[in-house]
Length: 394
Image 1 (cartoon, rainbow, N blue to C red):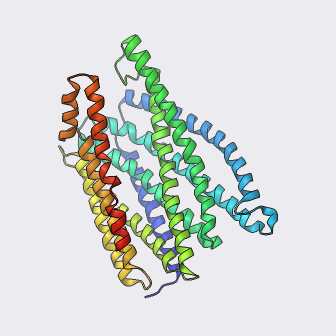
Image 2 (image 1 turned 135 degrees about the vertical axis):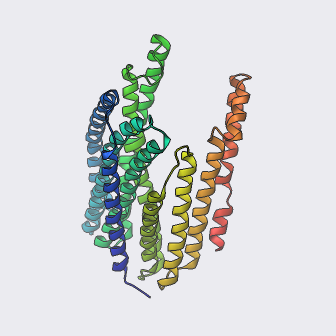
Image 3 (image 1 turned 90 degrees about the vertical axis):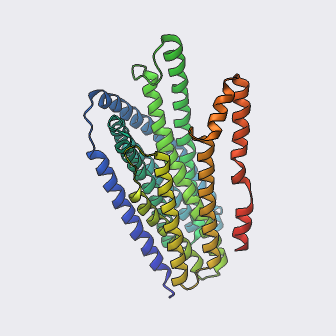
């Protein structure tokens, strides 16, 4: 069958609503978990207050930068506004603001969820790895679902209203401008606090590492939440939007007025989000299970479901290309292979880490040499061009 592009807009919005509903369910589930340890609550409250103050201050500074960038875009992009097409400039500027706002909201949601999930994960860890894993995983899933849902919502809304994929570049730049500083700012803060905690706490005062009596430890955790949660969320939002925007710009240039390729992009992204929801729901771990194995199994389930769904969509919808479906499947498989390789080179139960640990007994020089050598080898699978060549030949 050959549905209209509006059908895939509707599909995208439907899956976005489903993702947000599932994210709310996970957040409420996390909030219901036990939080009774007075010391954990006290430390968590300090981290939460610090993270919210930091990100609020950071967003105020970024608002100034965004305002300057907005003015530049309004005046000069996609062409000087006095050249005769001010609507395009206004559309690009509004898309930029929209991307910035959604990126900020995604980061704020991440802080909200993380600061609630962290304390409950710590308390659940006293009972075993299973409850701690579920709380940590589902708390992180709220952020992941929000990022992808916001990106799909924003891209679909902008393209549906404007009808020009090139305007999505403004939306993508809005996401990028926030991600660039949010991740760097939080990362600099947390690393500075981490070094201070080590120097002042462990070296000078003899306080154990990560002891909350050391104020720098609290600051380090504040930075982790801002940089690794809000900043990383903004970075992932930017990457997802940029991937969709580039695909849609290429799709629009190839269609010549037809919308099969554009429809395919929205269909695949929506099906990917749907597959992720199912994969998150199936993540389980036993009482003495391995968290890495549980995460990997969830990834495999999501990958398999997505391949099946995209194949069915390609079979059902007229104009969908089996070549693109095949290339997508190759990309997924390569991503899984890279994940397996990374796990092999970094898991302390695997031979590589044990070899580095054994070499370290001979001195720091062997630690550096072996670590760097294995690190370079670990990047080899990602550098092999077989996947790109295979996707091109499909």
